[in-house]
Length: 397
Image (cartoon, helix red, strand yellow):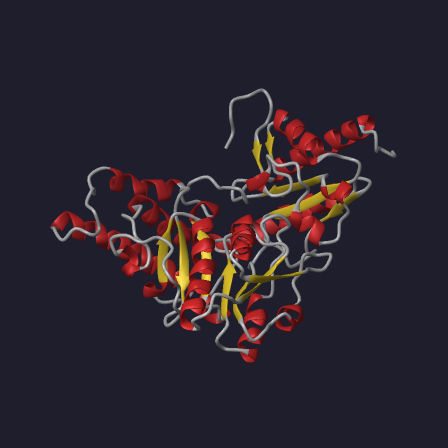
């Protein structure tokens, strides 16, 4: 991904979005041209379109270790999160003829989960936000301890988007189900799917969200796994698409692209991850050599491509802008809210004080990242951190 500038260009914000795989693009192009049928139409063009979607569904199900009929296509990860949470709560309320229930989630969820829970709180639903340790790890004991008679849903992410910590979802699910098999367990696996092995049946979860643009499919397409037999009320009513669960004409090129991308990601995962872990660990070791730098997230149980840090006496935003001028794309706090000046809710939940949480940097690597890129990142971050500390009113060099 090189641009013809005098300076080097390094894209290290792959947790925000990835580039579309050329083989994915090749598979999508015909679907924007000659294969133009509506999958809901009965004629030959419609039937042809439907077979493309069926194939994509099969591909995704085989990677996620579930049945094709358990995969539903959505517009993005945020929609999947909203649908899973609102749909499970709605079903509980209707089934129990009540207007009250309880949700358990964590303090480090993505905003799509966080804000959905906050919106439900305004409607009178109780929410418990379980804390995390200094590595952003959720303790299954805490989740089980938070359970009540009226707990309808447990929503815990599989891997954190900011610090890369991988959560013990299988263990959490097992413990929740042992205490009350009726409680619905949902995991936002947007950062995990396509990057680490994810097997829905093995995890035991009832629902699992994922998003195409995190693993080299285009933006604007996501999915929700809903285990057979689990009832999740529809979020979007319409013409009965997605087996009556999600109205709206399917984004056929996107769906096909996502199917292909996930297939490729799973085929290349082992080799890619072995290489990524080496680069990531090298990056971590070298940046931790800077004074007052710390790694955020779990030292070992983390996503292969994610390295996240805080640098004391520095403002994350100035760090980003100066790196951007050197041709490095990175992020601070949460990528989706980088325009807000609030410190990251994830870092605060991990117990970092406000002033340190402000100086965060997330570097997320990809299949394209080279050792030369890592060396360049280290060189630039070192320069910028030293420069910012010289001018920082807080700097104690």
